[in-house]
Length: 82
Image (cartoon, rainbow, N blue to C red):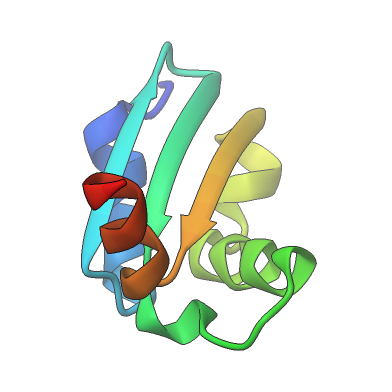
């Protein structure tokens, strides 16, 4: 059974300190906006690795593709107000 966007959101939030998460998708391919203070001071690849770690084995078995924007709270707030 393919995961829902809500399940993917829950998988991430259960394992990563997030202030905001949006996930959309069709069961195989997902797009996410993830806002976490844990991203502060990290490069893009390190941020993505944190998300992949939060998803664990699900990334290999259940989720076929995940496109993501990873932002710190400050980056997210600057984008929202800009």
